[in-house]
Image 1 (cartoon, rainbow, N blue to C red):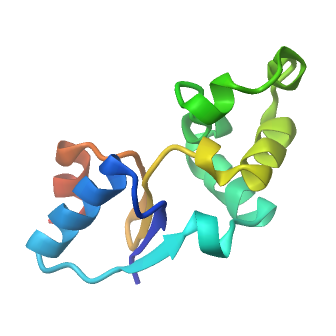
Image 2 (cartoon, rainbow, N blue to C red; image 1 turned 90 degrees about the horizontal axis):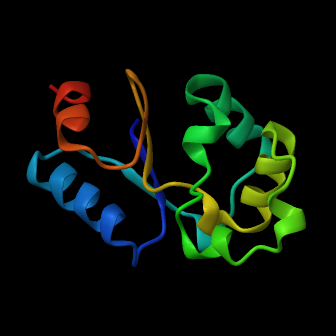
Amino acid sequence: MTILYGIPNCDTVKKARVWLDAQGLGYQFHDYKKAGITAEKLEDWAGQVGWEVLLNKAGTTFKKLPDAAKEGLDQAKAIGLMVQQPSMIKRPVVEHEGGLLVGFKLPEFEKAFK
């Protein structure tokens, strides 16, 4: 079962959903804002792709953090921030039979779902 994690109003999530729909690929949508995310799930993902890939440092939510919250970032601290504010997770995250995709890059999606 493919699960797409994200926020419904995110443009990148919308692009991924449109692409998956156009390919006729079924998926379940997990809305971070409504359903949240667990530290265990983020730890699992971090084990697959690294916490640095998951944490969206370019986003407004991260940039608005006080400097003290950004200092000394490690996996545990980053996961804590992402659990508290799921908007800090790069979007979308897609769990599929072959692994994990972070962000929407067409060549990666085409390769993963061929």
